[in-house]
Length: 212
Length: 212
Image 1 (tube, rainbow over the protein chains, first blue to last red):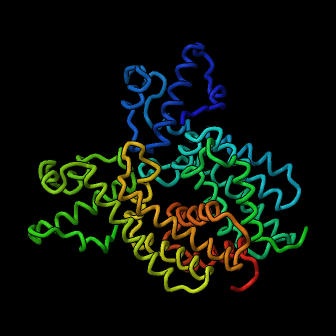
Image 2: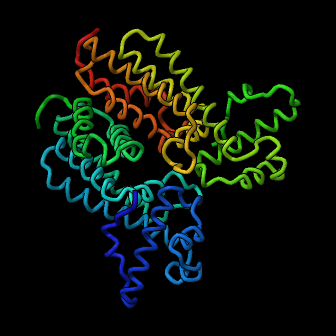
Image 3: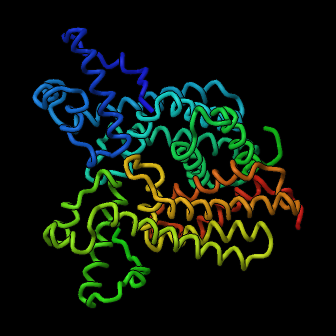
């Protein structure tokens, strides 16, 4: 599944030519695909240069080392995720609606660009050798905090039972992360149908049966 | 987290010396750790030989190629999983108890040997280059079929709502697979406490409220 990287137009650098921008976007796309499949350690700059059909020196011109490439991809993926999920949950009223919006938005971002998602997601657990920088950790913390606040809200309003927001958040993230293992857009269910069933089970599991 | 590989004593080959068996067990343990972290493509025989402090030729003596090493690890991991889960669910009476036994046994196997679990689990999705052989696919199918049959049983007995066993099975597997991303044995909760909370949410989500 090739990455579509709709956000790559945002990555243009002032002062480089359009052609250089295209090349940089292409390199980011290839690097993202490798990082998604093989992680940081399993990917070499040689792999990326070979796939892009350029020399390693030409690759260094755009990205001085593997880590700069990796951080660029991870940070971009996390920013898109945090921004869109924040926006979607802020428009929802009840805790149930907020939790549904959180899951649906995250799943849609995954389907739109699975490689970007996986590269970002893998950054925090597969690769012990690539310590995520503070900026990435901060973004991930904001994302997880947003999820826990949706759950805490439901506990406060009485929509949800008195569940632990941390462990319930793990359930939600596990369900969403698991999509990359089995969901295929060409399969029998759309992502919206899957999320409907997922939230149906989850909200029945944690719901109090009361409305807020 | 070093692999404990309690099942490696089963892998002894007739005709080799005990010392050769120890060496083989050590090589399997190292290979398992690499496969768990970096997948098939991200691991080289050179990595394994260097870590074991032997030559590549000495490694070839035990394992003629990377694939033979990988298959040995994946098949062993899957056999342990299928055998223990089959045993545990067969002793449970109701569908709720069977589903709980399925989740608890799988989680315990993960905690006992995270690397062996991850190497087996990764075999089916991370590595497009290492096509799992029929034996591995058969074992995975038996495992997933067992899970779906626990869920179908609950639908039949009326313990569960009329949920889709396939999608509900995805929820269960996602919850369990997600453990490798966050659960640490030295953390505040034991694996049994986590599974209690997980099954609490899940069974409330799919349960009908009736007893069988």
